Length: 71
Ligand code: SF4
Image (tube, rainbow, N blue to C red; front, side, top):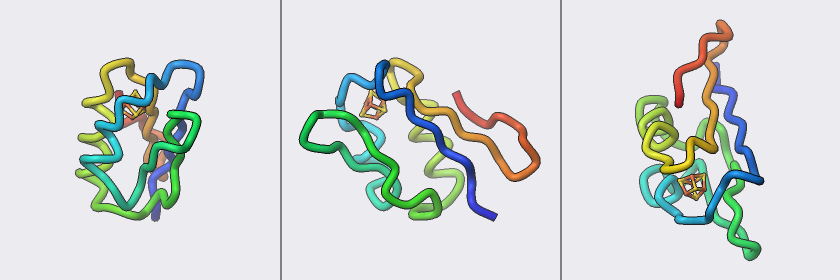
């Protein structure tokens, strides 16, 4: 089951790090805000690591059981 991924668009600074780490899951749009293009685009570990590495903790990842995996 896919992870639940929530991006706080007010916090995102558009650095692009998450999209570089998990390019099939995240993309930075023309307004320099990250979007989730496919919550199952990359391996779960890759997505969780990308979320943990967000410098402003803008990405919240929750698993199917409701446990928060990141940040
Ligand atoms: S790593 Fe965080 S701040 Fe950078 S683009 Fe992704 S969500 Fe935005």
